[in-house]
Image 1: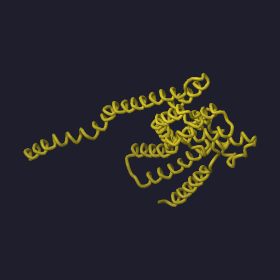
Image 2 (image 1 turned 90 degrees about the vertical axis):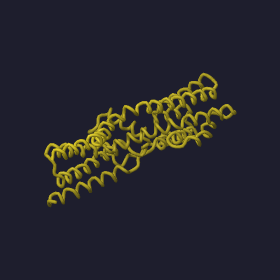
Image 3 (image 1 turned 135 degrees about the vertical axis):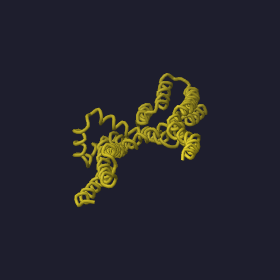
Image 4 (image 1 turned 45 degrees about the vertical axis):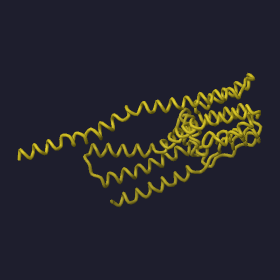
Length: 288
């Protein structure tokens, strides 16, 4: 390794570590911000105000709002958009280190080498966003699995004579994971004096899962019109369970199409070698 590389790589590594540590400073959760609003206490300025100003210059308002919404959907309440941008910059520094080492120790044709280096760089830079998108998908899938049981429990407790708030508190035990966390936070806001409809709507916005949003809308509408909430919850549970079965069947129907390319690239060449390999060997032996 050249002396310049021996200096540049540690500097890049130190810079990336510093950015990762800076991006790990927890921000305020939605419940903390709600508490400050209810107490009429002005929010304290963030420690990374200059970083926020830099992000406001780098990202347009639409991108910042979209990133903030995605962080909330992922359940990363203590990560701000500025911290996410810092993580992307830190990943870019790490990607630069990997690319430099790749170009230093791997020798390929120039076009292939440049293409591989570019792919490595883009893949590593995208890793923080990839983790965030995977967290969003995981939360929505988890909600989709636990929502029918949660609605069944709520329906049973409401029909047994409990209020909606008591039913929510009782049914939250059968909804582990993201759904339970959002319901618990909504219950905490209700205990602090926020209206139940507003708290549940905020939970639906944070989770942004279609079936859960539909459920919250149906509960709010039924309560406003004086309908039988227990019966509506039971029907919603059946609908969500049926929808989950349909999604599983849809994924199963897509499997043959998804298997075409792996079979074409891995299975068929092996079959051709097994079938025609002996013929080629015999032909070459007779020719010799």
